[in-house]
Length: 408
Ligand code: PMP
Image 1 (cartoon, protein in one colour):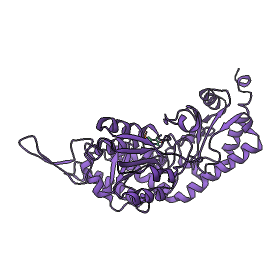
Image 2 (cartoon, rainbow, N blue to C red; image 1 turned 120 degrees about the vertical axis):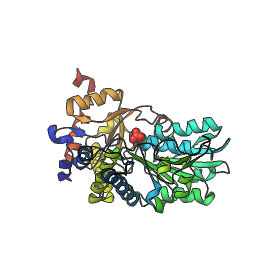
Image 3 (cartoon, helix red, strand yellow; image 1 turned 45 degrees about the vertical axis):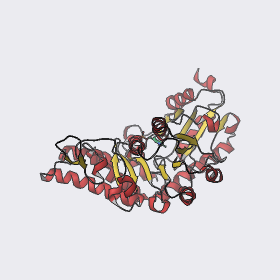
Image 4 (cartoon, protein in one colour; image 1 turned 90 degrees about the horizontal axis):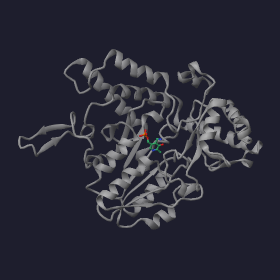
């Protein structure tokens, strides 16, 4: 993977930076940036403006990105892919769209590990219609406890929503099995996956998983900011109430200013001008990931973590560092240096070692219900990382031992 770094302009001027924050956003590859700039330089028209060739070309970019995305997640139809601005937008679109389907006293099941983007829209929806959001029990390895989920399902359960991979402890859920259990109980229960953390790190197969909806962001797949995706099974997507009403999604508005006719999917849920330059970047990001292969990416990243774990043991780092998820096979490490505020450690790693990691709640506000701490440090890998960087990280972590002495 040494050659990989060349794809990332991030390293061009500061080759000694160690970026361990792919969970927050992955670095952007040159091909994506070039595609965005090319669109702005050479086209820049509105994809709704199909009256002229340039507008048609813009629409073609959207069509190509949509059909590549369909293949990428193995959806049945390109119309099942809705472009949004990101995972947050996608989940809000879904939660708002289900307002007529989720009623008083209905139950929505979530885990306490969820990112705020997969909690707040559901809490807000539940509060507005009088439904209830309930916690799913987790196993020791932070995955969903399927036996207790089975016991929790009942006739009020309308939706189960969880992350494919958690953005803090990296736990990877068995989506296919969990969905099977839910659908066997009641095929009408909606299953939604927050795939923000898995989309660039493991293969997605919405058809094999048999899930109903999935949300994710392009910026987590070496791609552009400002584009996200909502996948939905056609008939379920078609029943959603739009979140945005506007241009490009209506066919007719009656003279009585009461009735209107909406376009069909996908336009129906895509009111307004899309982020077309970023969508041009999506094409390159998918091509890049496909050129390596998601299984290879997953293996590579999991092996980096195994290597990290080995070094942790060799250097007895557990004496002064609490690691929360060493045994979880993923590309995320969550830890705290005993007795030191995480933000002091992140500053120390940045200023002294050029190592970029996150500290805090990492947008998972209920994590304390799972690992008994509100805040921790997260290091997360991508294919742009390598073992030499992990060696440097280990050296830096060794020096957090006498943290206060080092700093002052
Ligand atoms: N869910 C998860 C699991 C995430 O990791 C993130 C991004 N950190 C989001 C949702 C929100 O994504 P975005 O900010 O791109 O909307």
